[in-house]
Amino acid sequence: VSDGLHVTGGYGGTSARLEDLHRAAAALRQAADTLADADGVLMVAQRATFIGDVFGSGAAARAALEPVLRSPSSPARTAESLRGLARALVEAASTYERAEGSVELAVRAVVGAAASTLGKSPLALLLGIGVAAHGLLAVGLGSVLVRGTGRRVDPSVLVSSGAAETLLYGVGTFLRALQPGVQGLLPAPVGPAVAPIGTLLPRRPLLVVPVLGSTRTLAGTDVPASDADAMRSVSDGYSTPGAVAVTRLDHPDGTRSWLVAVPGTEEGTVGGPNPFDMQSNLELLAGHSAAASELTVAAMEQAGIAPGEPVMLAGHSQGGMTAMALAGSVAVTSRFAITHVLTAGSPVAGMSAQPGVEDLHVEHTTDVIPALDGRPNPDTRDRTTVRRDLSVSDDPAERAARLSFVDAHDVDLYVRTLDLVDASAGHDASINAWQESVGSAVFGPDGTTAVVTRYAGIGGVEVATLSPASR
Amino acid sequence: VSGALAPVAARARGLVEEAGRTLARAHQVEWVSDAADRYQAALTEGQQAVLRASAMLDAAQHALAVLDAAARDAHADARMSVAQRLISGGR
Image (tube, rainbow over all chains, first blue to last red; front, top):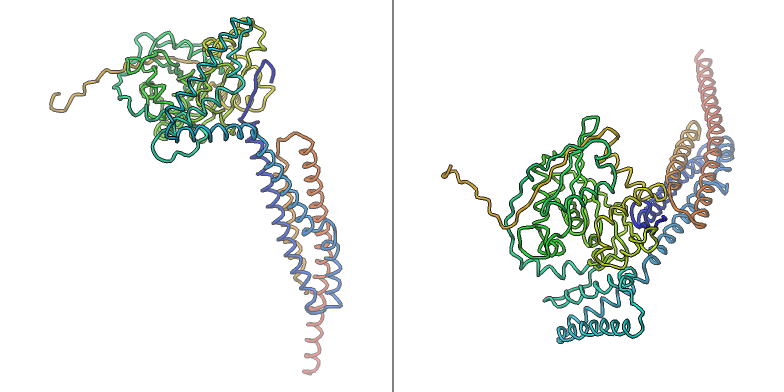
């Protein structure tokens, strides 16, 4: 795909293709078994020709069966050749599976083993401090190099090359190894590594209310009709701190679908009134319930989403993590028909949605936030990841944004990236399949209208419940 | 043997045709490479072999049906002849 977009996973991804090959091999084996059954039936018929009039009608029947049984195209020989083809197909798929990511897996194995050994060592903390000190020293030497030579080291290369992700994988494995008991290597260790911190954070009560005057009816081009539009809704949500936007889409045939837009981190604090804070980040990364998730579910309930009505969750940064956490929850998906999840700049590789939910993840190659999970997103039929290299953009401002960790994570830049993604559907099977699916289930046909309402969450506010005696 | 082999051949032919339908599913692979081309060629050859086997079974089934009918007629003639002899002897 052009425009610096690189697509992995989804309908046209490696995993889906390998599934195709294994399915084809199974069909070949099944066909071979059926032909073997046919051969068995013919052998029974041939044996029957030796009963009774062996030289008269028996001989004539044998002569009739002879061409089928002796031909190179006999059921038995064809079955054998199909079995050979099935074996070759499985071997080709296995070779591909082994080759796919083998170098990356080898590097991760070395990093994981080293980090785990370090973490289990009696001098683990000392070694950890030593490694961190060397890291700081490297940064310091880099600064000296910049002053001495005038040549600037580009830190974004650390992210785009995958080095930062591998480094975080090592740090996550090291932190897990510090925890008591035997800690095996995990493909996504960052979440479990921060899980103990998540349990230390106090749960905060949350009051969720509709934002007064926020309800608006949308028509024409204002109605969300694309992935970029969905992310625009997320971007607009930042103007009302601590709130999610729920858009009801009314289709011309009378059916309804919903778009829930969840913003990212808005406060760098812990335990404050805004649910989109660092506490929610840590809780989501650790796989715990977060105020951001509770706000989103409460908003969906108050909006009146009925069971079976398709819901698309769209989120930026922490909002994407919130969306994936909800789509992965049996309790939530049994109440709401979450069909699609769209994330932008979110570290969601360690999270997974329930089966049947389709996900589209968009990441800029130099955005460090999606790399915080320490591993690339899984390549499965339901999960498509689009990574965009901003360095090949036609827009000088976008090329410059590549060098800034803050700008590369900007939600409006992700909206522009999604415009490109939407335009590239004709060139990529995975994006095309996603667009067809989300278009029919959520966005609906021309003539669809929409009503949007924002719901705000206020952390730390106890809601007094009246006991029957006090009424 | 008589009167029994054509249905057996028809059963074998049904199985071969079922195998052909199963093979059509193996064609549904969105895989593009030289190896994929070789796979599709081998699969097409497999399908043609199945079609040839089906055609040969068709011919065998027809031949066996003729033999089965002839055997049935011969049995009927023999039964008639025995009956006539018994009737003649009875007089």
